[in-house]
Image 1: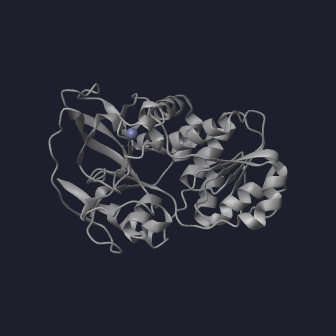
Image 2 (image 1 turned 30 degrees about the vertical axis):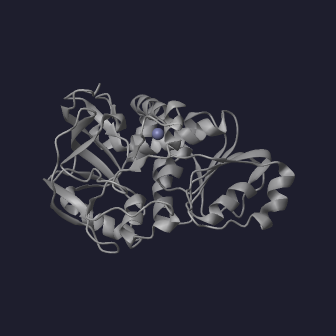
Length: 345
Ligand SMILES: [Zn+2]
């Protein structure tokens, strides 16, 4: 079958041939229908894992890229409750299902998890064999192009659950990439008021203005007064964490999505801003299966949330170039990859 693989760090990925294996008892074989590519692939290609995953061993190469996907189960192992013919979301965060964290319902904190396309072969292929635990049935009302968006929605939703209710409260979103844009949309949906997004880069800012017409978009956090109840930090840069803390009122909550590896934060300089106002700094990591199922429901119910994922599409033949453009920072907005020869569905 055809697949987009990373064959050497620092080099553009290539479309080539790869093997697919039949599913074991606890696995399913998925025919891939759509994949989002973006910042995760940039990190894989650059080989600079310290910024994102300092503790992860490097994968053997070649590795098939692709973290989040939609598809259809075409073969199911004997123990899989998800059967052939099911349309599914593929969650790139694969937990073990057995450890203490998993048994506590905190699968997002499973120390034995692996990431598709980063630690093990991913979804940028015609077919992929996966544990059934990382696929989730999706209703027909969510088109194939939107199924990978469940990843962003559930990651953002997990952050809101760490924060508590935002209804009637003010929310500043720092960083308007894929998670930040989704967090802003969810904040609106959950009744937050006002919602402001800070995004310094021009291309994502133009997209934000298109998909979030009723939300104020700012190029810098400099003008924000320390009066927000919540700051959702999704910038992937250290200054974004600092900006999040600085814009909060007394007892405000900063929800930190970014996993910044070896970055050093200026906590000394922030001390007077942080400690004297009893700011709560809360980490939000990935999502649980409950977050994923609830996000599928949210996407099915809310057209305005689906509209936030009006992404450019390419066929698989164009995916390697898109990822190379991401690695070179020529692109900053995710792209939806369809199967070979197909650009819309
Ligand atoms: Zn586990």
